[in-house]
Length: 253
Ligand SMILES: [Zn+2]
Ligand SMILES: [Zn+2]
Image 1 (tube, protein in one colour):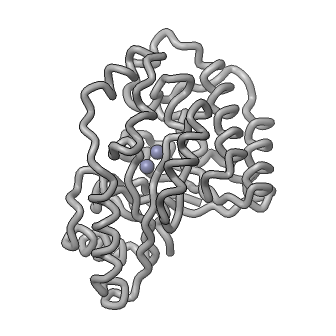
Image 2: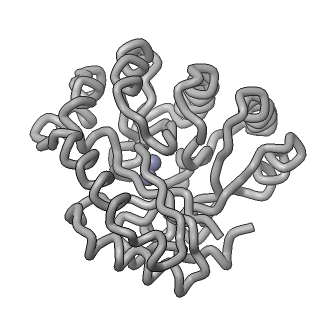
């Protein structure tokens, strides 16, 4: 079984960490590991996060320390030469989780073309400058209907950009239990049709468990619409440390 979304995050780039990842994963039935980090970890992508559109988001990123992406790329080489895949009889793939911004599509394309990752995941983490998944308080006073409407419009642009082979957590906007007043059925249908048309996969993500959400994973309606449109859905832990790999997969469809 695959876990298509596993972060290194704050764990160091060492062989020991990869061994821990494999050992925990194997106990939970995982033998294909999609390892990645966020673009907001790397200097080469820091241009994405200088937007001053939203004060809360700007303050979050303004003192962030970025590392050169070569630290990650050198580590990938090291792991690929380490023989870990043969030793444990597993598959290790390396990629990036990319924050998608329509206004930086050209620059993103140019930067991404410099690297040869096994996979690229596209994510909507920002809505018109607002990083909506950081803090529940930051939602107070916002127009929830408008946020949902823009979230799915940005996701459509993400898919059409052809920059990615996989879409992350397509309902992450529910993270703090805010829901729109209108039905999302037509938006789900549109996303599903586009994913199929652009040959992209997506995921059922158990990562919300870390935020204490009980309703983890895709809602049934969205899941069924994706299946009906023949979109491939993989399970994903969104683990930010190795103890969460394959976490709660038994609760996901
Ligand atoms: Zn994400
Ligand atoms: Zn993630």
